[in-house]
Structure formats: C-alpha cells, structure tokens
Length: 361
Image (cartoon, rainbow, N blue to C red; front, side):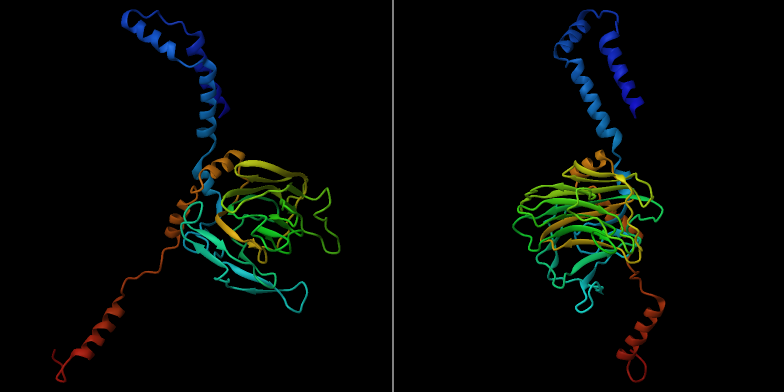
C-alpha cells in the first residue's frame, strides 16, 4: 500500500514540478494558462491524494463482513441473524437458596426485552424497558459464536447504544456487554457504567482467577481497565462502542485490548498476559445487564479490527446488514412443496366427502 502511495506522490511531483513539456501555442496555450490560474497548490493535491489512499486503500467492507462470527440486527427479532452457534438468547438467574449457583432458562422476558421497529441506528433495535429480578440477565451461548481458542485468539465486539447513563439506569452497575463464564472479574471481557455520580464508562479485560488464588480488584491501579470519567450519555443520542482484543490466552505478556467510542480510540490494556480460560460450553455472551434503553447492530468478529475499520464501521452503521441475506441463504426455511403422499390423501378425503352412495360424483 505504501509503495503504491509513494508512486502516486512521485508521479504527481514529476508532473507538477519537474516536467518541462514543449511550450504550447495558440488556443492550447490559453487554455493551459487559464487552467494554471485555477489549479490548486501542489500541497493541497498531495493532501487529497493521501486522504484518498487512506479511505479507499485500507478498508475492505467485504473483509469486515467475512470476519463476523455472530450478528444480531434486532430488526425483526432478538434472535441473532447470523452465527454458527445457538442464536436464540437464554436467561440466567441467581439461585434462591444456593449461593454462587445459577438457574438457566431457554427463554427471555418478552415484556422487558422487545423489538422497536424503525427506532434503531439501522432498522429496528432491541429495547430494554426494565431490569430483571433475581439478578437476571440474558445471554447468547458462546460456543460457535465467538472465535475463542485455548491456545490463543483475537476478536472484536461492536454495538450501538442509546441510553441516559445517569437518569435511566436503576442498578449500581450496568454492562451493555459482558463475555464470560464465571464473572466480570474472573475471565471477563466487558464495558460497563459504574456507580459513580455522574457514572463512568469502563472497559475491563480480566484474566481467569486460578483456583485458590485471589484476583485483582477493580479499584487496584494495576487493574486491566480503561476508564472514561463522567461519560454523560443522553437518551436522544446513539453511541458506537467497539472492543478489540489481540493475543488472548497465549500465555505471553503480549495481549492487547482496546475500546473505541464513536470511532475514536479511547484507551488500551496492554503489555500483560490475559487469559479467559473458558470452558466454551459454559461461557456466555451477556448483553444489556441492568441496562435500560436501546441496543442495535450487535456483532462479534474473529479478529481485532483496525482503527480504520472501526472508523468505517462507525460511519456506516448498516455495513453488516447484508449478513441477513447470507444467513437466509445458508438457513433456508423448510420446504412448503406438497408431496405426492399429501396429494393422494387430499384426493381420498375429497372423494370421501363428495362421492354419492353409488360411488359417482
């Protein structure tokens, strides 16, 4: 890419500065003189060339879509449009009598979680109108829907949020997304709003805690977190959040996670080993934990998106919509064709109802 770019600059420089063509004559000379009077400066042309190289040369929309492992448009249903794993959400509640244990249900509260047609950043949106009791939360099973590998992996999460971070949220903490098996601070990737006034937005990437050991706390200065003080989101505004992660579960101190808000890099957790250590059969992609407001265009990727890709996704909220058509082609509805057996049964039934006693019609 750099080679192409500098070739363009060299050609432009040669044309504008060094070229000494034969002097034009007559009408041609006049046209050239008029053109030179209105020509932009060399520096402005160079700037335009650089900008075009960045926009058209580095971002391939098809590559972004190919990297998607899970996608929920929330246009028609809370069930995800695309994913190799289970696409319908489940609910987890705290066990009423056994501390640390949970009850799982293969269903959701449809009065709390609804689809708001035409209210999304692109089409419909998931609207959450209240919190669940018993510390309830909904999730998509992680198996098949996230690019987790025990010996090392990378990925990204992208979603759009519309809420008032200080007026709508009822509980002390709210996680628009939290991917984990055991908990936010025990093998968890997430961003949340805390209990500060005004609330902060925070991103965490906490390793699994080995048995018998104590994990690092969120208040520890060395905690694997990024903090945005007093985020101040308002109910009328959509915001785009992307989490990227690279080199997780490698056992090496080279992991890197980052949070982008509205297309801009906010902060990173880096230069340390970060291991989720999940049993993928038990891990979940939790969304809208204690959240009230709208969510839209939720997606997971099998790579850490680049800054240019994140910016492009922010500027084009509908970019992943073609995945709905792809999912429809890969999962066609059951055939509605009538079989020969069904035709025969229908004829027999018609004959039985309409034939005269002597068998004639």
